[in-house]
Image (tube, rainbow, N blue to C red):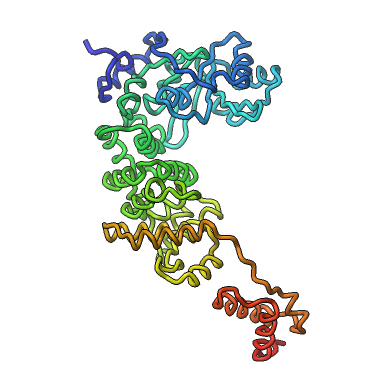
Length: 462
């Protein structure tokens, strides 16, 4: 007889029979199971703030558990960044318990049962146990429950359905521990059913595969993602942006983007995300090829690397950043990085690089140099010591760049008798270009003399 899939002791593919097991459980099978593991020692478990929040939440007599990423990452020895807690108490009760304990409580998502506790500068997200009542592919309508397994069953992947008691006892209803150990990213139940609940889970699948997967991805999951991919255009740009940037932040971003392209996941949503070769080389340079202080993985730079570049790509880049609802600053940065042609070649003169650095600034120059070098590596498919030394020298110059202010201002021209107006601005810009062409050597008196000379050749503008 086939065991229910949360009782299996080795990783397996989820199939229709597994889904039937889940349906039978949801129809009323006994749900609570004993713990099956123990968290290794964790500093965050012993923080006074953690202990105070747990004490406050258990004052009602309810059992609370840590859930999701903090349990998953603790089990696989990764740094824990976010601490999530689940409780059978409703959000209003949680607010009261925290406030009575003198802990700041923020109603961050009351409709979905989420309250944030803030203590000692640390944040704890506390959510009431839930079950999904209705889903439309974008949002879920939830109801509170007191059933830990029901709450776990509504999560996306088995490795995210783990929970742990305050003393570290781990509860695993859906084989999350062996899946985590073997690098298996598995949906809970049938992949197409779980994706239909929220189409963002398509991108989440590839993100978690990039971070926790090993070996070939699950075929059933890929097929379900591929079939539902056109629906991702229904998602908000902000949600899509968040997942895309998280995928690009992973060490295996190029492999996963290539997989997504091959599976036609991005055809409707982001068909412009295509330059896997340049993306791969940027990741190499950021992480292994250079090891220069100041260069680290950057998802916005990686996004620019995977998109088209140059003057002809401006409209394309702007369309992508609008679709992803990016902030003005982030959109402007991606567009600026894409204009790689504004950076001189690696073997250009130091004077050319000085002038380019002054116009762009050091950080943007670093981004463009990395993209230009990655493009060369992707196209040539070889290593050149001359090219390597040239780009490294340019990058070191950009990383150490200190802005050089132009030593002439409008007030200086006014003091020379040049009247305020458009002509003054034109003279100032021309003299600045003249100064840059001379590598910033001319000083104040020379600049003033040049300004007067140019003023005398410009007709007065009335």
